[in-house]
Image (cartoon, rainbow, N blue to C red; front, side):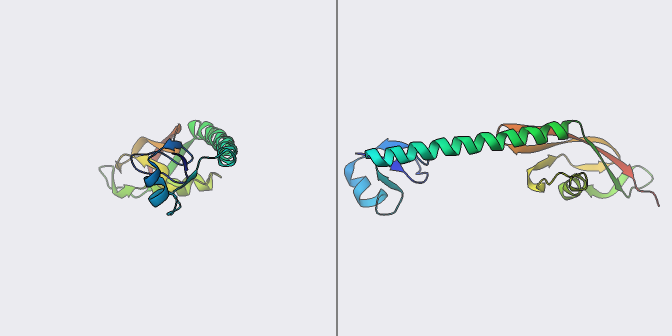
Length: 148
């Protein structure tokens, strides 16, 4: 029996996949729990339309991510922080501080998509911003001593 999955099912398929399963598995578990529907002509047509719309939306999101990546590639942010005489920071530079500096420059980027190595000294560093599953951007960070 062919069915269309409405959500990912482990060891079977992903959302909107058309898969072949035993009739009892479909009738007794997948369809009653709302995980799947029967793959008839009208349901197949609806799934194809949904797939087309999702693909269009994903392409738009990727294009926006590429535009932001181009802006980030040309950008260097400067973070002022307190440091000791040996150029070691009192604490470290966090992704929250990086996201705040980007917000000041007009880019609203979630701190959870920024990865950076542990920054505990003054200097120049690089952070990676994961904007999309296929789009990453490197961001230059300059850590300087805060003037008293």
